[in-house]
Length: 360
Image 1 (spheres, rainbow, N blue to C red):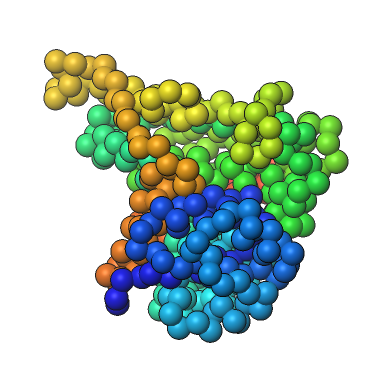
Image 2: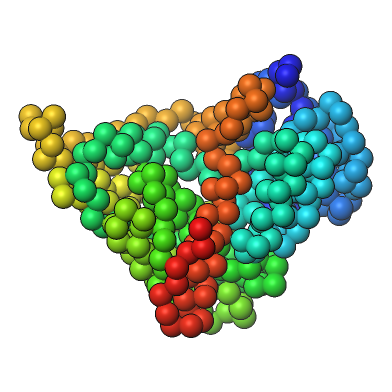
């Protein structure tokens, strides 16, 4: 396949649409980003507000974009309830797909998408681009080298600004449209990361969910999960829209996040949202670490306004490279399906009060 120079953008009102356009703007090889949205006024406002020279054409009819043979890849940014049907249409049109997470409201809605993608012979990746953060890459490598010994436990925390700072009337807080709350929208990133780090699957979930913000929403804004992994490791995950402060609006939200992974020979600790130079610490009693059992890893990242910064750009570039080389991308639809099945198990556990086995 020749170099990909055109990527279609589907959906302009998603919270990340503008940021994803910035990502595409950062890739010099991409010369055009045709855009679709059924809302003509929103399309016009999007084009004017972004000012991107790459947005040379806009469409209010999806087929007008999907029928363009010179656009081999589409980037889908839609509501969770809308996404699966559009992905199937894109796959049937022969388009390779980058799609926003969590892709669907539940696993059952994603399964037909994966069947359509397989039948069409196209590639699909999901925006779990946090795997591309250099800290994530290094933690993945170190755990693969065995510095933890036998894995024992994981502690995960993702706390962000309260719902009142994020527009309680947004579709993100409507179960019928979103499928879930904090777990579905943001928790999916951290569930994906821990599985990526451990090269393992979560097999059992015990969850307690609550809606405590006082806002008129019908999804959870607080969650506490107990997890069991296939390798026997256990873990906890606390997530919530809880912080009383925010910088203003969606993009200005405050965060308090933490990941600790412990084993019989070592541990790794990372504060993903801590300001300043990205860093994490690792300790190991392995012989190779005897001269420096405690180590700090720091990274200087290039300034970049793309979604996810420079590693978000790399995520998209790697997918385009996988399409051109006819290879599987690092992150596939199967990864998203596994996360949705974990979420399904969490919601079932909260309803039944029982530990739930994650469907494999």
